[in-house]
Image 1 (tube, rainbow, N blue to C red):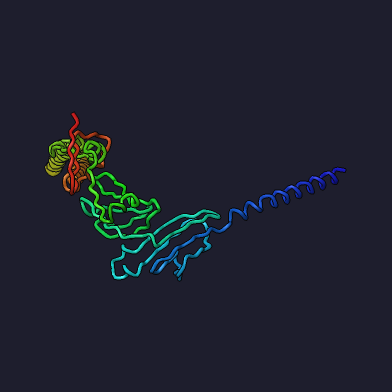
Image 2 (tube, rainbow, N blue to C red):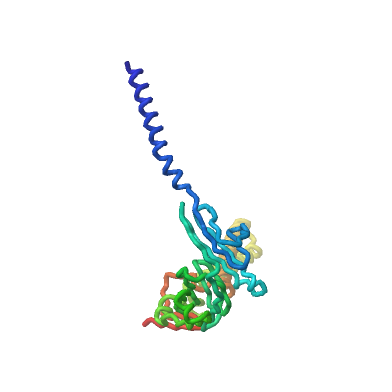
Length: 305
């Protein structure tokens, strides 16, 4: 009885899974539908992604959904520099339709003040001003003009086309207060004498000098007992003097070694501090009152009281 119930449950579960798969299948097929791109050609070479298209009349092309790049090389700009051909990135969805009219295009001359501003078109770097660039019209596209230290500007191509293809953009500098607040790097002045009188240097130097003085004292004691050893006649007195001479000599050598080590530590710290100092800005826990930043086109100075 239990076996029959288990088998019937398995059959019902299998049937439910098959039903679920057949119900989802049309949705999966719909999600994989191709998109259609209509291109109205002009006199020039057309490259869609990496495929060269030979079009003499408007044509509808089946493409996969996603991101694509269309490049158009007009014949009348073949002898000009590279920015005069069109690079048009676009995205098309599943079962979507899009029309690109290459006959509605023109060359814009873009100049900026100051020069060498960066131009971005559809999220991609286009080049630097001044320059001549080919754009599509009637698409609502715009060009973003940006330069460090200046406010970004947007050029709406369709709105400006009625005024001509010679575009001039004067950039305004960014807010000076924001620049000082955000971009200044810290610089602080410290007196070199403070490095020399630091506690660790004084401690290592004082310890080394004290140990050398103690070693010199025990060395003199060892010499004195050794002289006694040479002058005395009794064997017991000579043995005692010799023992004291050896003990003081060992203490002298040990203190001399310790003193040399202490002075070595002092010399190491002195070289690290003055000959090979740490990089500026390594200590970030100590705030600095003076801040300064100098760039080719601007400079800023701040002092906190």
